[in-house]
Amino acid sequence: MSPTISIMRLPRVTDERDSFTIDLATKHQDLRLHALQTEPSSFASSYQEESQWGLDRTIAKLNNPQTVHWVAVRTVDITARSSSDNSSLLKSAPWVGFITLLGPVPSDQHSGKMSARTDPLVQMQISGMSSGFTRVGKPVTEHPDTASGGLEFHIGAVFTHQSARQMGIGRALVDAALDKGNDSATRLYGKAGFTVVREETYAQQVTSPETGVVRTVERVALLMELRQEVS
Image (tube, rainbow, N blue to C red; front, side, top):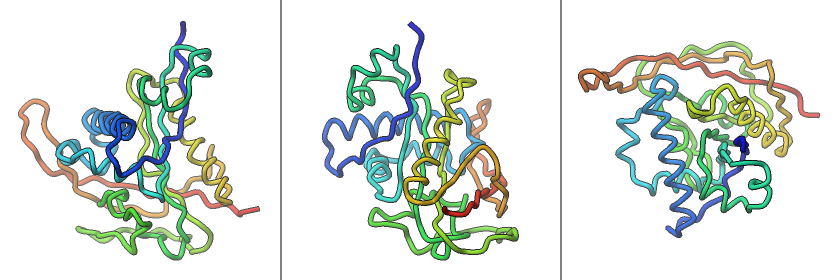
């Protein structure tokens, strides 16, 4: 039987450490750490930093009312997928990808404050969007055409497991996130049209696989956005 990939939205968890919440948080944390360890240059955060975090921090992220999380779940076949409820699949089936959507927030409230130098999920308080983001280091390079207006959504993280690449999972995850924007009256359509609106540098800790020495490297992050009229 050939595997089937299902894109599933994670349900809102509770602050209580029930078995379902612990299962989801553990699987999300494990995949996140795998992503940071195997693709360190793709994330602003680092494995060295997040491997020290407790499970409560992941639970807080999953419970943030202004974030929505989707995961790509590998199931045995389409029959098994349709005959099981989502909760059972999320607990039992392997996760092979994830994406996080942050927002919505008014553009004039938040435009330009998302930063690669900080973890946006940490900066967003459990009660809602924080008033600003802490920045360190060099000033960012602003690009034109960043006029305020409308609502903003931010894709915070995208990852596909190495064993499940070249299957269209990354695109399916992005499509799921953009569909969430449509539900919130911001019509985003995502094959093309994203443009770079800001560049910034950030520091990342990197461990040499040969020597185990941790060093700080400077990387460049691009903020890209898609703007369309709401019909």
